[in-house]
Image 1 (cartoon, rainbow, N blue to C red):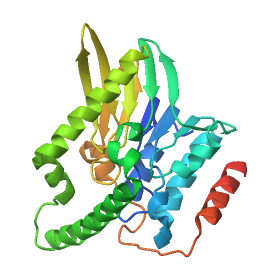
Image 2: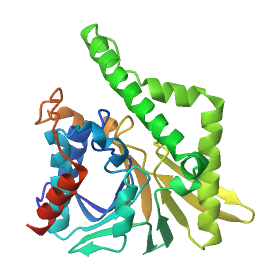
Image 3: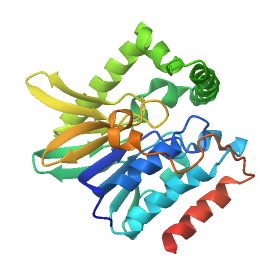
Amino acid sequence: MSKNKRKVEIVVLSDIHLGTYGCQANALKKYLKSIQPEKLILNGDIMDIWQFKKRYWPKSHMKVIKQIVSLAAEGVETYYITGNHDEILRKFAGMKLGSFHILNDLKIDLANGKAWFFHGDVFDVIIQNSKWLARLGAIGYDILILLNLVINYLARLFGRKKISMSKRIKDNVKSALKYIDNFEETAARAGQKRGFKYVICGHIHKAQKRVVKLEQEEITYLNSGDWIENLTSLEYNKGEWVIYEYNKDPKMNEEKTEDNEKELIIIDLSMNTLLQNILEDFQS
């Protein structure tokens, strides 16, 4: 590993949604190349298998996979926790290939308490009871992100700041804010009942570090956010969790991206072929 990489004990990423128009794969690749984690935890929705039928898989998305493979090959303990958008991988839960593991959840004893990692879709009523509605919502979200790309392209031409339409909607709709609060408290309560000090989720695309008070006890709820709009991760060092924000990292923003961000490549690739290619990368 390069001496220039930043050493981190644990890095948590979720909701990358490789295979969708909104995925910020180039930025994520730069981030992964800049760190040297001891453990890399991929907390669900890394690949968006729900929307894979449209055969959209740019080279930059495959490069993210290859970077993850490279870290695992170098001995970084890599845990792929399944989410709802990549739930097809749940049938492989328990599989281990060198330093790479596929799991439905992960429990780790940290120096200052036990931590429980899981994606969080189990607490989503829509996911559990109306999967077709959740899939329809995912398609609508991807269309909104694509529209947002066009709007921000025009904004740059006229010297305006970038905006996030979906983020503005979520931040200003009371029902969305209530859903997030309920999700966080539900996840925290589930962790508290099982004796954990930390509960770490993804799923709702909102990075968070929050101490939740439940009766006479406290539990820390954490969320790694996403790599579509927020470009965030969780990092753990010396007993402390922090939210990493790519857009506020001067080192990431001062360096030019190697790949052409405007590149859009449509590949006629089946999911079976893609998974086979990824498996071959791990074995090579």
